[in-house]
Amino acid sequence: METRIFFNPGDSIANIHDYNEAVRKGQIFKREREADDLVIAKGPDDEEYAIFYAKDAQSEPKADKVKAYEVKKRV
Image (tube, rainbow, N blue to C red; front, side):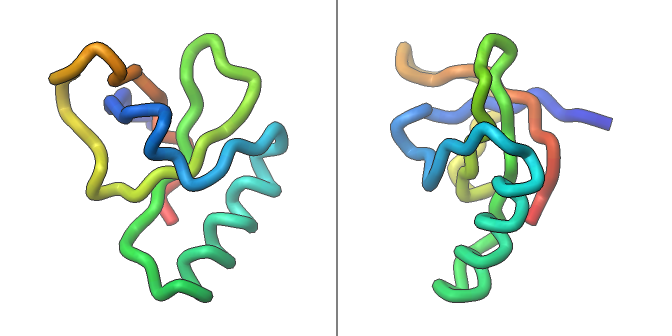
C-alpha cells in the first residue's frame, strides 16, 4: 500500500528513472554512509524516483516548495 507524504524536492539525495536502480542506490547509500532510514518516492507527474531521508517527511505541506509524493519503498 502506497503512502502520500510531502517532501521538499530540493532535499532529495538522488533522482533516478529506474525503480530497481533507485532501490539499489538507496541501499548502497544507506550502507556506505550509515544513513538513517530512506524512502523511494515518486511524484504524481514525475518520471523519476526520488530518494529522501525518511526523517525529512512532512505529513502536510508547510511551505510553498513542498510537494506530495507517493512512497514506493522504505529502505
